[in-house]
Image (tube, rainbow, N blue to C red; front, top):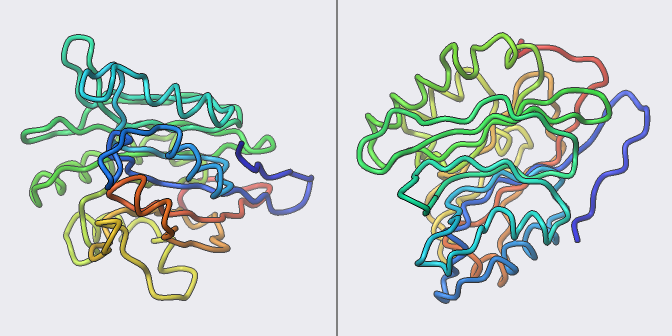
Length: 258
């Protein structure tokens, strides 16, 4: 269903990455529909997808493994991390792609109230490694600061394996650009929406967007060819967030965060 990029042995390798809070596949019309989320992703042509707020085995959404269902519809593989795990019910974040991948780390972040987490996958793009880190930060300002401090620390972004390859850090940060958590990340990485030269667009709420809280950051070795928030009748119904899509070029031989 998804339109994947064909890679040739050129200097630059291009791929599309999407970050999307899917709200447990419950749309603004209150309909539960993983197929509709898969349709949004397929129409975007994304090669790598970072999803937040997925239900797995939860009664409220019919007991479905939403990560597996969406990945199957897209003919991709999914790495899922349950930030919340109560008996057989799980809720969390996932990274989907058809590229070869290696799960590097998945775990909790310091949280107040609802447990938050992150997942780090290394993606092989035509023989070149790419780190993709997907997260969903908390609702409180101090909580988000602690969570970003953890992500910037030695077990995540400062890990030698992470530092050795180009990287994308994305997700629902619940943080506007004026917030301390956003500024901490922006001091180390580049905001994809700011790189491309047009005014960044808000992502939430999907029907009448006011807040730019879903973000996609890249390391210096990656070139952002385009970045856009997908706003159309389908995305405004499918979730309470709009998806953020970036087209990125990875050089043939690159290392580290710079």
